[in-house]
Length: 456
Image 1 (cartoon, helix red, strand yellow):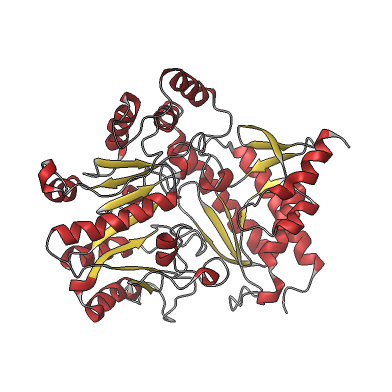
Image 2 (cartoon, rainbow, N blue to C red):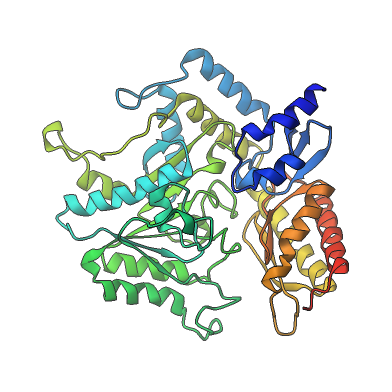
């Protein structure tokens, strides 16, 4: 047996995310090399990374500037226990990150993953209210179809049904959900703008119904991935910002996906001109070169409540072993340098607009276009079986997932749902590479249309 066959046979020793491992082991994808926007598996097959890993590798794979920064850091100091000290690199990174954060989100808790940081933000909100005498403020409101992480607290805030969440219940007490701002299929059966942005007003309805004295925070993704790249109407986020301010509810943006240039600015808070009280970022912070996430807090919140002498015992009472890791900080600092040097946010805006324009035309020509959504270097197509009525495909058809099987065979990796598929390529992508992705995508969609009766 060859070494490659041995690897394939023994992939059974691993458990991947959200995959049925029995079927994966029958035909495993094992990556051995990566460069730019391309991945290569152990058989030499090349894949276009049309989703940046999973909205992670914004600067592309194999960036030597980041790799060298990590190597240099490893030679100096690779770990500092956050219980005792910090590193000079982590301080330099925090200074630089604060400079690109929106407004006064200048106080930073460096951690290593998305679930860590969203849970930290919710813990911060509860401790903040308690230390300000609002002992009853413990509940959180979030959106149906939103996703905030895989740990139990983050999953309690997540608004999904089905096996990704339901099998792990019961969940933590005090988590409420409201419908998302999904204009294409409005949960209230209304049409924008005549709806008066009822989806935002529902936040205030729930706060008043539960009692403002019981609500600690409202956590949401500015653009929801698991909901299908749901882009809210322009007034949605400013409206919820005003509601949260009036009721002393902390507004938490989960920008694990939307941060670091993905929506056309450093953060979606800037794209939508709305500043939260806490901002959670991850993924693109280090672009996958090292585990890194951050909870950014408005200075006024932190210094008014958590800053004091030891005897006051009011410090933020949470921590994780790898928080503020020097190697991760070195990677994060180098990522910012690469993005500024190569003007990648502007390039991402151009590529995203090009993707959305081509998808609009191509999917309409195929007769399956429901809606094209996105911002910056994000693009999503929602499929329909009937463009006149926007009738979705039957659930059992699983159109988008069947397309995904064809995409993988054709060498294109995207984020696929039964009813929609999204693109989130690295910000280094060229127009020619984006066209290559679209050409493969159109071919696979056409093949799936021809393979079955999508009208049933």
